[in-house]
Image (cartoon, rainbow, N blue to C red; front, side, top):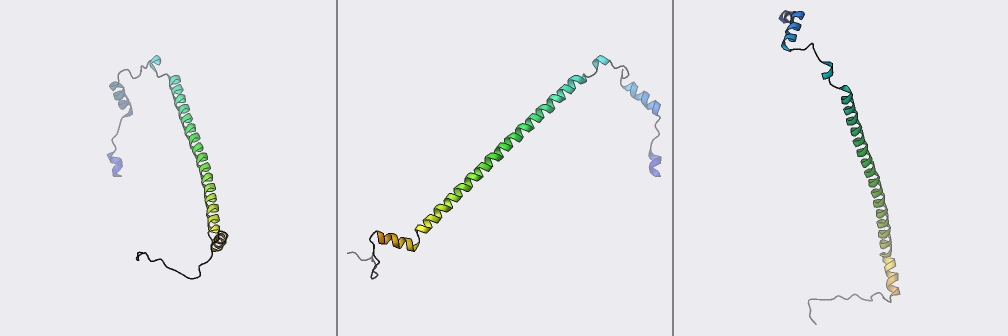
Length: 123
């Protein structure tokens, strides 16, 4: 209730006359001096078109990078598979049974007794 008593009473016709008096020639606007809306619409159309082209270009570049990333991941997986196959082959060739067979083919025989080399004693 107290808020309604604080609102000032404004006489509408008097306020309009005061505003019109502040700005000279407000009622007399020349139609030739109005903003050309056709040029403004053309400008907005050009800006929107350029923005769409930029967004499409960025989207195309990101898509190309995604394809490149997919190709690199595929190459990485192939390289890892080849590495695993090579490690399996090395482990198979390095097993004790395979080493014994290879040594026998080279003419090596197992030692009958164990001998140690003492490097501290000079011959």
